Length: 207
Image (cartoon, rainbow, N blue to C red; front, side, top):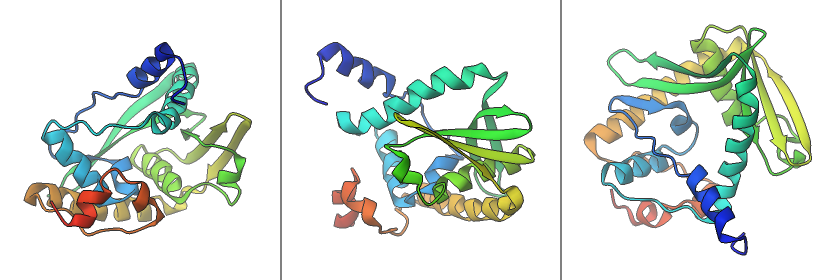
């Protein structure tokens, strides 16, 4: 990746450099699907004006998603639909539906190859699209996985929607409380820890 011509590298960096700032009292659904401690450290870095630098190879995965998202979601009248779900005496959970078509909420995901979904859709993606369907009161949900060699679509059973929403509400309260107290939530150790940009501060026990 580093051997790419500079104009291409700059374009990748520009496309993947988000200026999004989280709102006080609001958490994004994607923060709740993965490690809450990582989400906390990202929020603290943002609050302190720190720039968490992404390597080019990590930006590439995001870049591919942005490209497909831009090409496909605009084909549908209902696209990039912002939704919110308020927890009583707690934060708002926010998200953005890629597009809605034929009474179905769809979320686009880019993956490296078909092997990544050989056992079905990823659990965190299922929770995300179920949350969208339940909050938006849409009866059906689908996940579209895209890789350079093809596309695979999964239609998701929405009967677990309420159960997933309650689970995400609980996680949202944990993250919200941690941010208010400025104390990181407990570690959620997994194989992803060794690739985390906050592994040093996390394992060092700093807040």
